[in-house]
Amino acid sequence: MKNLLESLFTEKHRLTARRRALGVLHELCERHERLNLFVEGASREMPSILLEVDEHEASVVFDIPPDVEGVAWDGESTLLAMARYEGVYVGFALEGIERAPWNDSTALRAALPEQVYYLQRRQYFRVPVGSSDVGEVLLVRQGAGAVSGRCHDISAGGMRVLVSPVEGDFPLRAGEQVPELRFELRGVALQTAARIQHVDEPMTLSSGKVLLPLGLEFLGKSFSFDQTVVRYVQQRDRDLLSGRP
Image (cartoon, rainbow, N blue to C red; front, side, top):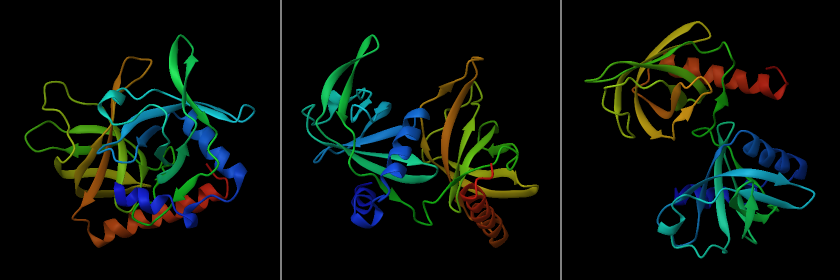
């Protein structure tokens, strides 16, 4: 993660169009994307989300990290924020931090970031999938029942999925090897092995259904599997750039 931060916060990855940079901040806020906050010298990151981006007041409001007491941060020093946006990494600095009232609670307010950085490399590049592009994703686990879900975004190296955990089975954890990962991509049946790279906080829908976000890394890909996914990612990226849904 340290190497990624060092690569991200460099001049060559800075978004030079101010309106584009502000648009990224607004979308991170609207989508409630997870922020990873870093303080110099700390051994781990703190999770948070953007609550408000106020251009008029030139400020942003973000949630107080739940485990802030366990990190060597004085509550005021500059934090580096990193998030995934449309499958790539973005970052910005949070400066001038102070506590501020938010609804019936307290949050943190910082100056509107002057710079936003955008890291797009082939191994990180992901695209959000089209609504009908990917069929049901099936994770065939070893020693536990299969788990099904839907794909959120995909890259040549992996995908992010939302799954419905099976009650009674051992929990899904980062590092677990998945012997078979099956899904259809625009009508093409694909299968490979995978590894769970990360497990994010569960999401509870209004219906009460619980979904678990997983980051999956493809393992042992065949040439045809890789080419099918790469072609889709490239075409999907062109579609999005041209404004097609």
